[in-house]
Picture 1 (cartoon, rainbow, N blue to C red):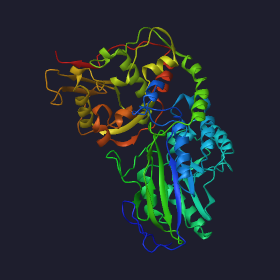
Picture 2 (picture 1 turned 120 degrees about the horizontal axis):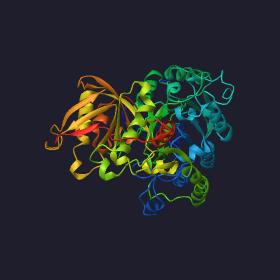
Picture 3 (picture 1 turned 30 degrees about the horizontal axis):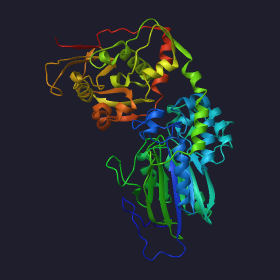
Picture 4 (picture 1 turned 45 degrees about the vertical axis):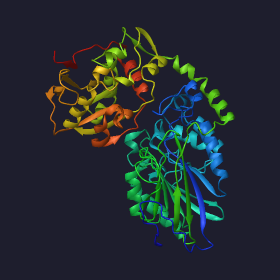
Length: 522
């Protein structure tokens, strides 16, 4: 295989002496959109029409349409690709499944996408319907779908397209553990990503294709491994771990692009908050001689396309039916008052934490943390609608599971009780454990005096399985230890509101009680 010139960890321009055969391509990309057709807040949750009018919202399909069209106008040679997980994350998916995503992606003119694990959340049938509705190929190289009648001949490992007089090879990747993360069924067999990509690259090179792009819903760790193992890959457009790469933001997890050998890796966070724009120049041997760009922030400076905005509003009308649908019964008032939940154990906090733990206990998870700031309402006695559940948990947070030491759990509890006097939302509601704290001790100086897990004193050196929401797991409300020390992390579980609704429905007539999970030294 030809040598690669670009070895810097940042984009390195080697434009001196470029031959006339140099070929430039603009790669526009998104990933992990998760049905965020409406604008979102800076916290990735719903954003009201008033806040949007005030310029406080991000993303939404109407902004993406404008940004994509503007980006296309800046170049005479482009592709628009997606790194997977268009499905799941809002009521638009609950109601429309993949139909709304197909409509919007067709409107923007996507070239191709890879399969994310959430594309399998409702089995092969929904993915099949989506694939039949889009005007572009859906790719997945590291899965054998030949035994699944709904997907055989529908999902391809790769595709060769022509742009600007040159042939480009596009290859798809999905998480190897998708069978554990979603519901693909027993007929889809997932395989090693590097080996799958290598096989496609070898086949393409044998046919004279020397510009190869992988669309990978596999996370940065896997993407780097693939880049190292398969030097024939020129660009990897990533997804799955919501990595923000940038050359200008101090919040970025690396440069845009991140170089591994001669391979340029890009990703654009999630939820339509950014549109990735990478400009790549190849020489006639297919080697990258320049790779530069930056994700474009979909903030108020990007105007919303009027037609798309109106269409999203039209699609939203039936969602009101979901909000009024009765999903459970309450045996009495379930108290979620912030004045209570942010300073002590509360019934709603116990209910939410119990629902989280129940959903993942079979995975070896022992402890649940729910930040009280994420609990926004009480529920009255009687019928419970989905709208009420979403009022309690309005932020579209997802379940996050991980492992951390007992000391990390203790440190998290110290953070949780560090601002009780200010009635802050970091106060933890818990399940699977109890703790006692001493308000007479200064914050973060040893307020936590006792922690019990499964009836035994916590062991600081032992590793425990924990579930929380993605906001807390990523360091929200001061839980930096979860962001920095967590192991075996998965941030993209089901929506927390759905988890709570399903748990309450299974309880019959829910009536959680305050039962001494949290106590303090008097």
